[in-house]
View 1 (tube, one colour):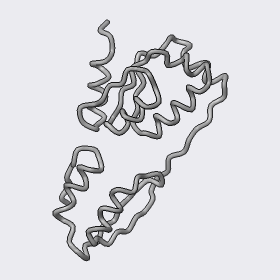
View 2 (cartoon, one colour):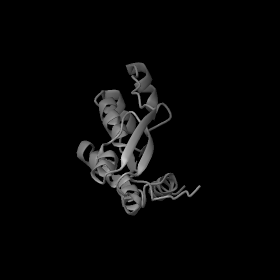
View 3 (tube, helix red, strand yellow):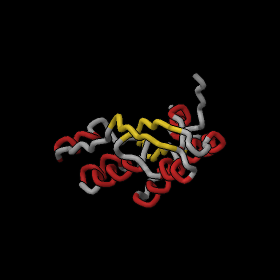
View 4 (cartoon, helix red, strand yellow):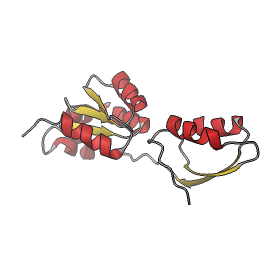
Length: 150
């Protein structure tokens, strides 16, 4: 096996794959049901034969008002980790309820990618921080930098 790590986002993956794509090459793409179209469009435009197998799905969870009220029972959070635009959208839906809006208060929104940060800035007035690269380690580094030192 030849395994390559490309940096955590689709644009880097496409750049890494481009030299390997020749007409007639076959690619198996294990994907989520909820996904953006860029990778599939990129591969199709270059003549790659693509088989997509959906291996997971992203489902929204509904919360009762009582559950939302418990979000800040231990005090206002210092930060909220956001790993997808879907997370930003769902957080906005939750904060449409007065109790949820109070629950995140002035929390810093820590975002995995620029795309997520842009969505967060559009929907929230909270401070937004961006991980240096789209990896979980960088997200956690950003969280450590954002939290007040105790």
